[in-house]
Length: 353
Image 1 (cartoon, rainbow, N blue to C red):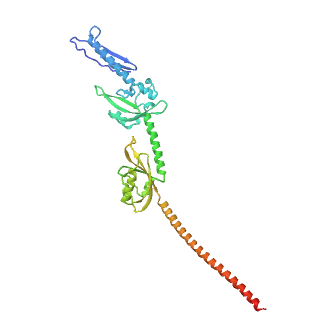
Image 2 (image 1 turned 90 degrees about the horizontal axis):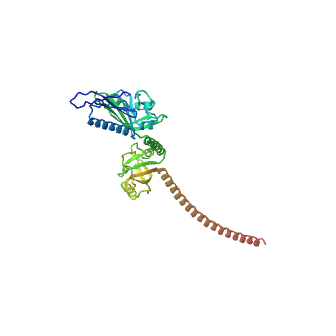
Image 3 (image 1 turned 90 degrees about the vertical axis):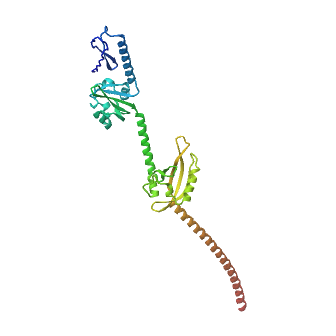
């Protein structure tokens, strides 16, 4: 690897000749300038040189042992340095990538240049910060959050330092949570019941598709529940019930709503209070709405039919009593007729003698 050379002038009255001094640390090489030969060099310059070497060694070890990933390029985007964290995260050894260009299409960095922000930063020598990914030797994506920073030399030439923190686990958790959220949302949307979250002012902040059908409006979010409840007294009753609930409680009540087209519907509302992360402060209400209009109509029809049946039963009972009285009269009449028949027979017998 080509070593950059830095020269330091010795502040002495005597002319001095320049001697290059370099230090090697791991896979990197550092040149710390020049010094006069042993006879001309004074103790102060030796001390400074030793201090610089120690500082460089500490910096190298700090970067190499850092939990953050580091990649350093030269002015032509060729990789000059990778720290051990890079090796751990990608499975690539340093000697497999050092000297390769970021633009060479190597597997480890192929995802890097697919990032529009990084491509723009490399092209225009700009700073960039955000999420990016590398590719592990086994083909898996490694997600990082970090920055790409230009480093300018004295001649205006620009190299880059890429830094990153491993967020793969967080990313995988986020993806899993997103999948669960989508499945839950899909399940909620398929339910025939209306699901709604209402804030403390009774404004809708979330509704599913079933709520759209129940309330017959496409835009429920940010509307207030009181706009749909049939009367102010009924809204006050709902607020009183909800206000008495404790964390973990739930209440079920029935009420009437007026949809925006002006249609009246009967609904059942199951109300559960929502609390903050500590489970103390109330943040709103989780509500399940069921359209019970048809059920209500059916119940009313059944009640009406029951009343009719009850009336008919009483009517039949009264008629049965009347029939019973008629039967008794007929029985009396039959008895009297039999007696008359007997008398008539006696009379006939008597007259024929």
